[in-house]
Length: 422
Ligand code: NAD
Image (cartoon, rainbow, N blue to C red; front, top):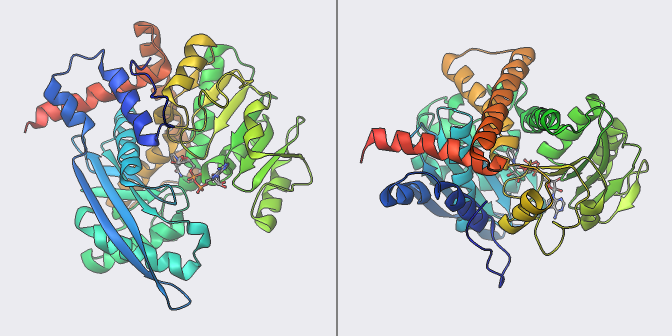
């Protein structure tokens, strides 16, 4: 486990969590001090102001960031997030997680992340388009199919990526490989939007086998019903699991017999939130952590499973990190060491999205398309292999899944750094 103790005075930021996890993992690796510095500091950071003409004629100015953490293994890769909590430090933390995730999955990418500090829910479609175009123009100097390739993250989607593609291509010529997670009509991969959620289910199933947790009929609770949470819920429902609780920013719903997913999706399309679903009991947001289940899946924000609020209270057999950095290091320790609840780390559990982004990028470069069966088959193969590689390392080294995953990933990046030289 991580060797650094959580400072009690303030809640940990996502970047703190990523840093502590990295430091805990590299302590056991034979790395020079300068290599530790190379791996912990970002390669390049771009911060821009993003003025946006609002529909009412006024102008608002937002701040945006793109951090390229490490590109030793290939062009950097990572999503763009629009959220009021975005700041440079958060983007740094998320970019580092992408470096370890792409290395763990042995993809020919490094790690990056971008974000704009904005409550995207308050923007009209036209405002969001103008914001995306201006942000893209201002970070375009660092982007490109062989340089840095964005993708969707919180409050950005295929449409956002389409605007980014259009803006980038208007300067560089048609460049579908400059972004992933774009609409299929513009060269996106079939199966990309479902990939992260589906990937979570694949990794969860492999972990369930190892830990003797029953599968069909098991209960899943999910915080977040966006891209990741909703596709995970749909895939789990199809697989015959019971999705017993779901929350989003508007509230939550709970039904111990399992929520009727098609009906819930229809409700969300009408109401814009899972709250108020007639097929379940009302659930206040934080009550999700007390719902008895086999699989507890945070699929929204960072730092939500922590010592103060819920690590001791979770009533589950396994935590599966669909969100990035949802568990603080102390909570991680409480769960894995004290309570014997395995935590499947983000860099493994939610890697399905970047795996299919890799498929999308290669299809774009080759001007070739795979069908959905092929995408799903290749995704399954990659994630099953990665899970068992991490499990074998965890067994061999006597460490938790997170430390095992970091040891594999950090070693790969360190080797590439060493080979490329200064
Ligand atoms: P999204 O914007 O599509 O959905 C976010 C969801 O979180 C929404 O349902 C929103 O209502 C909910 N949410 C926001 N604040 C909440 C709160 N306080 N309580 C409960 N729910 C809340 O985002 P997404 O793409 O699904 O990403 C979710 C998480 O998964 C993020 O941590 C992201 O970094 C991570 N992730 C996403 C991808 C991807 O391919 N989209 C890949 C890897 C990791």
